[in-house]
Amino acid sequence: GENVEQHPSTLSVQEGDSAVIKCTYSDSASNYFPWYKQELGKRPQLIIDIRSNVGEKKDQRIAVTLNKTAKHFSLHITETQPEDSAVYFCAARGGSQGNLIFGKGTKLSVKP
Amino acid sequence: EAQVTQNPRYLITVTGKKLTVTCSQNMNHEYMSWYRQDPGLGLRQIYYSMNVEVTDKGDVPEGYKVSRKEKRNFPLILESPSPNQTSLYFCASSFWGANQPQHFGDGTRLSIL
Image (cartoon, rainbow over all chains, first blue to last red; front, top):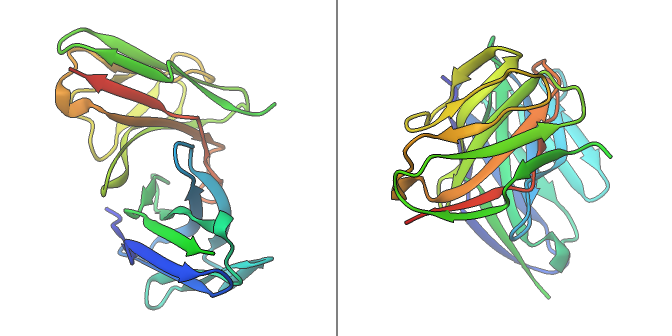
């Protein structure tokens, strides 16, 4: 089955800097890659997703890139702000079952 | 408002006392799923359902049961809870299809003493 690895597990940046979180997946049939943000005590919320027929997608300060050959995808947050502090999860879904498999999460801290 | 509703939000109970966590969605989603979240382990899938009367095991199904008698409801049942099932549980739903985003409930924090 699918296995998703996420790095780093913790990331600390200064306000205004960029943050990058990377994930790799094992199942070459996977074709959907969402990113979720989870603030303390709250549910995971979808912030951006990418399909396998697209290499990059941007939404304001957030972008995701996908390299299907290498089986990895990354989340890029530019001009970070304190409210970006949260745990971020990547996930991959594909194959006949369509289950979403999550990485273990990255705790992002943005220091003012 | 489109949402996934879980109840209860918090529960403290004792080993062996059967409990049910309910999950209901109002978006007509075919796919529903249960996850548990533990520190350092991310979100691990317990069970999922692709439609009414269709359920299957996720990565950590031991000690749990589910049912899907109606499209909107997907209860999680712990027949004989044990302390290692103390965790934060999330229900999620989506339309069926590999590219459909998943919507999460607000979570249920279970403590089994």
